Image 1 (tube, rainbow, N blue to C red):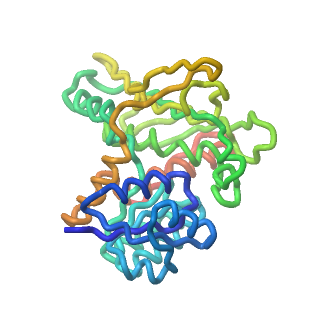
Image 2: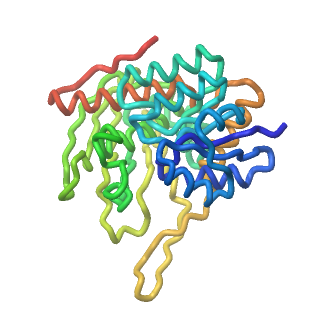
Amino acid sequence: MTLRMGILSTAHVHTNGFGSRLNARADVEFVGVTDDDVERGREAAGRFDVEFLEPAALLSSVDAAIVCSTNVTRRQWVERAAAAGVHVLCEKPLATTLEDARAVVDACDDAGVRLGVCMPLPFSVPAKRAKEAYEAGEIGDLRVAVGTNRAWLRDRHLTGWSASPKHAGGGAAMDHTVHIVDLVRWITGEEVVEVNAEFSTMHDGVEVEDINVLSMALSDGSIFTLDGSWDRPDDWDYWGDATLNLIGTDGELAIDVFDQTLKRTREGEGIDGVYWGSIPDDGLLQDFVDAVENDRPPLVTAEDGLRETAVVLAAYESDERGEPVAIEYRD
């Protein structure tokens, strides 16, 4: 079976990666892209050597699509795809309000289409090994989880939309929180029940938080802390990290998703990191294609996306109120 796929909006930085992966798959026909920014969409179509189509034309020509839009426009793209009977792999977070996130999930449920979320960390080799060890009881009962998802404040944040309150709905917390929360939920099976967040802005000219620290309580009573800041110095050797330490009564698991990296020193150019490991996005896309073809939920489901969005939004509420906030889920 050849799955016909397209990209809805090319706003997101991950558009290039997904476009290249769609082109490389023998079991996928990359039909084309659409965008509400025609110039941006046509430029992306040219890079991928596919057609630029109007939204209705693209949606009538594909079985599934990847939504690579700005955060605040995810709902309109997913609802449009669901109404056309098109399965969706959506960038994270699902939305910037809980109302929109629930509407996204409901639209796909009502239409009977699959909705996956772009959460690649569970597909990394270190994460898979950690889950196996955790489920084998190697650390006993969980007591503390400590995560980081730190990065450079890059040019794309400043010249694009990902540091814009209007288009991103927030800053580093909106960008990074969901990844490590997803990893904790997937490995441990526990939910975040409360969050106490503190935000700050370190860089001049930035309208959103670039520093954020979250102190959370999990459903089993254990503690979960997360630093998801855009605080890596410009001369840091790699873009950032995604780490998680799980400390239990009998031991500890240390996960460094991008530890499969070599340090390279070049005269006059300093030190940089060269990643040599497996690419989590490859596993993410493979899982979604398989889920559509075999009519099963993807590994990271719509409900996962909804719950992780709820954690992010509670973090913003906590920072605004200056106190812990209980997470409101839809059960």
